[in-house]
Image 1 (cartoon, rainbow over the protein chains, first blue to last red):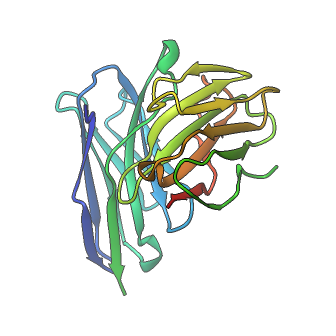
Image 2 (image 1 turned 90 degrees about the horizontal axis):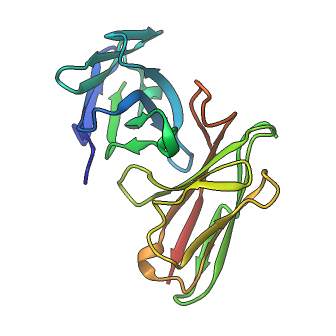
Length: 115
Length: 115
């Protein structure tokens, strides 16, 4: 069962533009929603994360928007730069019991930022 | 160490052979996770350890896969009778403990190719 759906699969943005990636989840027990950035040949690196008690979190050019009722969250990259070109993954995990910390990932979005 | 170290970085093996993949977590991190990432997909959970014990091995695909962490630090993922479908990047991640509010730190992975 695919529990985290991510879109789009790929995204092309001009330098300085806004990149938006969306995710939807099904499991209401999820309570931690991170975004990871992955460059070729490297492991995913944590970019930013949010918990469902807030609707938005901003760190520099990166913002997560969270809609608990719709079970959706999104990543916004402001002033996108060519160095942001990478694959982005949303993920989710639940608290408590033996599932704590186990992440369910989306399928990934390949972002290309043209100079 | 400064980061999560995985060895080897690449492994090519023949179908039916046995392989071992090693993960050295960040020093002092008690929680260790293994994921598998197929081409063009997000990482999929395999198993995680809190200390020496496997707290959740529900993601292991079948009994050909086994992982150990005998001293609560280094972990080894073992795959018996490898199949071509096992070809993927195997990622290891660690964090301070399963209740840590910080995200994982992933290693760069071992790319396994079964020919």
